Image 1 (spheres, helix red, strand yellow):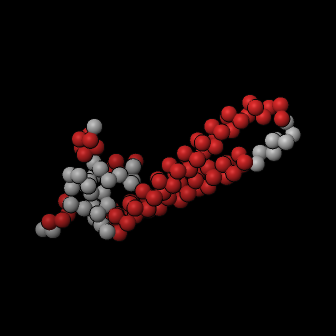
Image 2: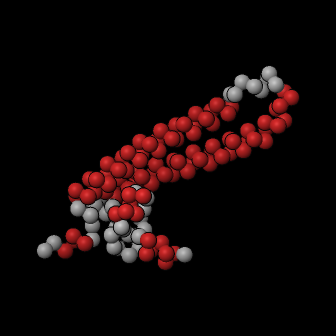
Length: 127
């Protein structure tokens, strides 16, 4: 009997996770493009020179909007990077193995958080 069966997911299971992650990356990149285009539109909304009366009201919300868009973009870029790292772990056949306990991460958790590197058990130990 193969002893590493319990230590990693099968190639077939890994292939399934790979498809899931590739879909998530595609969606995340699309979302990032939307965030970035919204950020670009903030710079060029066309009302700056036509309605100086409302400019004072808008500046606060415009700054907030730019900051939140920037924060969203940074978070989205990190998410994409984490997903791409998960693809590397799939290639290395280490995907889905908790980096603390060495046990398999529950497949339901991986479906919800495909870039997870910690099992719920290990996550609870951190708190």
